[in-house]
Image (cartoon, rainbow over all chains, first blue to last red; front, side):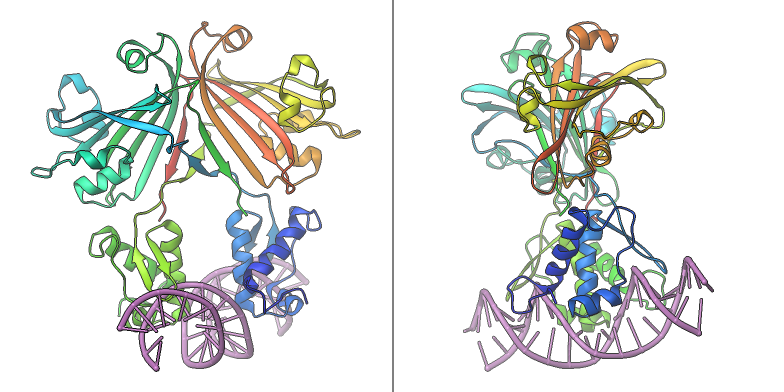
Length: 238
Length: 238
DNA sequence: AAGTGGTCTAGACCACGAC
DNA sequence: TCGTGGTCTAGACCACTTC
């Protein structure tokens, strides 16, 4: 009785909204069972596939869980899935510090392991500084697999993210990304580049990008001045 | 010809795997158009709804984008949606420092704004210390709306996350969560609690939880010793 | 045996884009 | 006008849980 079929809003979405509202408003309590799919078909006067599609939206968001042979139950939404916004790209200027082919020897301790390469093999290193209102706010290093004969186009490097760089250069689609977020205090070269005092707080974001066969194809580290830059993440299931 | 209908694996999933493989392996290039749904029906000998369900998985993951009237195209997967793991809960001991009703006056500068309350109104403050192998690794404060007459059960507080606390106490389902991740250096009370030297790096995670009508129902801050604790996030669309 | 959710089909109509 | 993806239907069979 509630679904308008002439509406621009699809029927399945109206079903999701209607049931979602009952959950959010407390009419359907956490843990309780909702009416069966066939009952909902009658109630909303739509086919079972349409009901199921609506329920799927709420299930995906974590508001419902289903149990074969038993029923569909109300649960608490999940907040583990986040959308991360790397902030204010528009107002940031990127400055390419260097883009070079390096040999993964002692001075790049540990990088060859992260890229699953032998010690001494070659890689591409790209270093960039990011400015906001003429002040340096962050600084990154990215290491890519070295592919013989493939040039690195400087024009592409200014604002590109690691997955795009890796795809363009290695010609492999990235399928997995891992982030590690830590904090540190700025020392030596890092403090110098970011025009900060030693001992200031900084956010460190490490990213590893993998290809289909789980081999790493890129590794990067971004160091951000804590007062100028923070990471924001939102989770709103439905 | 490729889909086994007697398999335990649903036909729609096999379709997603088959097309996903062609994308990941490079057979279908980024930007190119894939065969139309009706063609895929013939190719895999399944109905259109089954094809569409398979394509929906890849679309959701960002490997495909669709355009009404034009077709379905290969694109780069999205890595903006992350699953964040708050690390090693199993091996961590929580110690309840305090759970009290406070008045949001001067000493809690700014909290009343974050909870959208008047200055001087009441709130619940819960403070906890987390230990790992007898060393303090993090410390949090959580502020909840004060509901008259609702007791705070200490037993629930040990390991509960902010959304659960907010739901239990305010009896409102949280529908949105915001995280703000920054870095700082430990000072004064924080350093003392975490048994650290002044000036050490720490990760700060702020969380605000909202109800359906966008009113905040809880605010929390976690301060983590950087050497002991880092945030890990993975994104693997499909 | 009856009811539940999970899968799948073979059609149908629609809005949109390209020709 | 034709082909495309987006929606929707009315059935069907299955595996599972409960009684």
